[in-house]
Image (cartoon, rainbow, N blue to C red):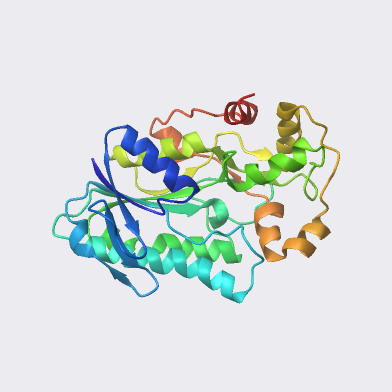
Length: 298
C-alpha cells in the first residue's frame, strides 16, 4: 500500500514507519519545513497549508502528529499548543483529504484515553461519554476534526491510545532509572487505573485499523487488562528485581507537575478494547508482566 504518516519521527510514528516499510509498504511522510525527496510532503498546520497535490493516490493515512503532552509544566501557552497541534492539524489534513480526486480508503487518526478523564473504577468502552477535563475536551475536538474526511466518504478510525509502554520513551523510560535505583513506588493512592498498551500492540492496532474494512469510529487501543498504579508498580519492581518502597504522594505530584500530573498520573481511567477484540485483533502482549518482560528483555 501507499501510506501517508504524520508524526513520523515521534515515539509511535517512527516505530510505525519501520513496521510498514519492513512489510513492503511505501511510506510517505508529512513533514514541517522543506520536503527532501519524493517520499516527503510539506505542510504547516499552524498556517493551515498543505501540499495537497502530492496526496493523490494514497491508500491510507496514519495521523499521529501532536505536541508532546508530558514535557514541561502546563500553562496557557502549552495547553494552546497541545490543543492546536491536534485539533487544527487534524482539521487541515482532513479537509485536504476530502478535496482529493483520488481519496485514501482510510484515515487512522490518533486520539487518547484522555477522552474519558477521571472515572474511578468504572469501565470505559467506546460508547462511554467524554469527561470534563482539559484533555477530555481536547480529545473530543480532536476526533471531531476528522469529520470532513468522514463526510467525504473516507473510512475514519479514531484510535484512543492508552499509556504506551516502550523502553525507548514515554512513561516506562522515565520510570526505569528510579525503579532500578530502588526509588520506585506507588503514585498517590495507587488505586487509580492506568490503561496501558505495549508499543507492539499500538503498531498492531494501527495495522488492524488500516486493513479491517468493518472498523470505523472510536477504537480503544489499550490492553485487555488495565492495571491499578499499585499493581503496575509491584509488577515492574518484580520484573526488575527491585523493591518498590518509595511512594510519590498526590500532593507532591500536584506541587511538582500541577494540572499535568493530576490528569496523567492521578486520574483513574479503566478502559477496555471492545472494538479491537470484536473485530478479531489478537494482542501480542495482553498481560502486564508478559509485556514488561518482553519489552525489557527479562
